Image (cartoon, rainbow, N blue to C red; front, top):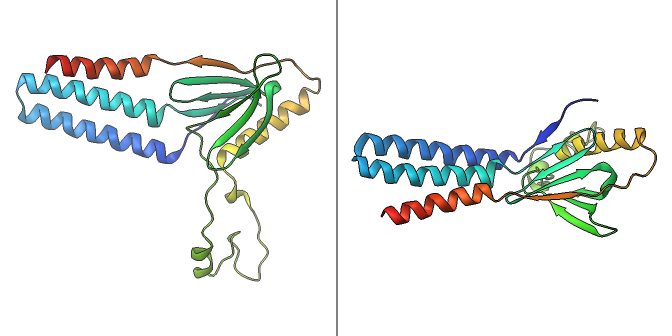
Length: 196
């Protein structure tokens, strides 16, 4: 099949971009009006805010490959082969049940994958359409708009993997801690406080 599909929440990306634009405006304003000391302090605060926005809003995502998933959250990343995937569901967020060490089942929730959109029946009925988007009296043609991109990507890749790997494999999900981005933010804040 080839390649990877990266899924992020569009709202999170929009918030990250808004924070970065605000940081850019604050930095330009500080350079335009401020003294060297003010600029130094401003750069530290802007850098801390920009790294925090990247860490909280832009970095979390799900990468779907031919062999499994990689769920990247704020402080942890999960490598989840399809062989270790017991169950998954997409509601407001992506939730996975995976086989961890031994026969233990671990629940993993993705912070960054888009969930299923909410239905707005009042708005739909005002527009003269049913919840499937069809005009009353017509047959709904597709319900794909009710499913998330995350669900479609995982379902397709998992189905292909299960079709080609009929035998059960012993695989477990692996967890990796990501302390570096948080440490950078904390260090920048400590330096800013220490400098005064």
